[in-house]
Amino acid sequence: MNFDVVNIQFQFSKKWKQITQALALSSVLALTACGASVDADFAKDAKQIVSSFDSSMKRPDFDSEAILSEAQFFFDKWGKKPNKQETEVLKHISQMSGYATLYSVEKEESKRSEIRQKYITEVEAINKIIK
Image 1 (cartoon, one colour):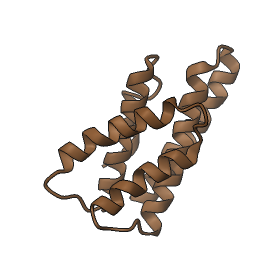
Image 2 (tube, rainbow, N blue to C red):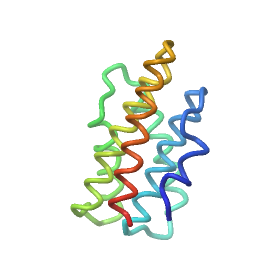
Image 3 (tube, rainbow, N blue to C red):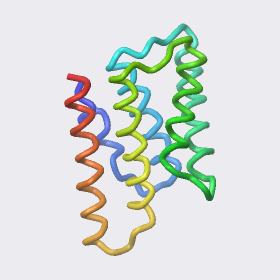
C-alpha cells in the first residue's frame, strides 16, 4: 500500500471536518499497512478514531502529542503496544496533523506552499517506513 496514493485525495481539503477525517483515516490505513493488529470491531473503532481526532484537534491546546495519545488508546484497546515502526509512523502522522492545521489557517500562498512541502515530506517518510 502506498500511503501517498491513499492520502493524496484528502491532502489539503478546505473543510475542517474533512481534514480531521482524512488524518484519522490515513492514520488507520498507515497503521494497518505496517502491521497494527485489529479485531472484528475495526470498523467501529475506525469511526471512533475519526471522532476522537476531531475532538482532539478542536481543543485549543492541541499539539502533536494529542494524536499520539489518541492512537495509543486504540493500541491499548486492541491489546497491542506499538512497535518501533508503528511509533515512527505515529510520530510522522502527528507532524502531518500539525501541518494540516497550519495549512488550514494560513492565508499567504508562499507559506502555504512551504507547509504543503513539509506535509509531503512526512508522507514520504511514512512511505519509506512501511515499504
